[in-house]
Amino acid sequence: MIDEKKIEAGIRLLLEGIGEDLERPGLKDTPHRIANMYKEIYGGLGADASVHLGKTFPAINNELVLEKDITFYSTCEHHLLPFYGKAHIAYIPDDKVVGLSKLARTVDVFARRPQIQEQMTAQIGDAIMEHLKPKGVMVILQAEHMCMTMRGIKKPGSQTMTYICRGAFENNPELQQMVFQMVKS
Image (cartoon, rainbow, N blue to C red):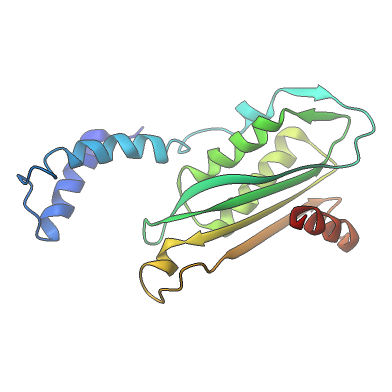
């Protein structure tokens, strides 16, 4: 899926385009290093969240599960600059739960591709609804975007927050507020 040769050729062109010397010792292996790095940071392309959300465990009478502060790193599809932050996922099980590490892996599936935060938030929630089939899910992402920090408006430290509600959370402001409070604590 990831074509290392094309990435290396593209990086060579980029370096030439900014006026760099490709024979400079510090840059000689850079195209290869970046191709290897891209295999890792874009490893979510083509990945399927169902792999992580498919194995469940019975859990009767659970009212709410919240996993918060899941660190993620992604890349803005508009500038190919990183954005990074924390994901918080709350769901109401319907007699089954998924292992907690599987929620973090689901976040990684969608973070490891060129992406916008707004879409990533919805993709995580929709995948959980589709594959885990809970009564409802709420996903909150908060992130710092390097396209706002190091270029353009240059506002380091600014945070973007997005959230989605599906199922039981959609029309229940009290439930949403409870999750927001749990995330803050």
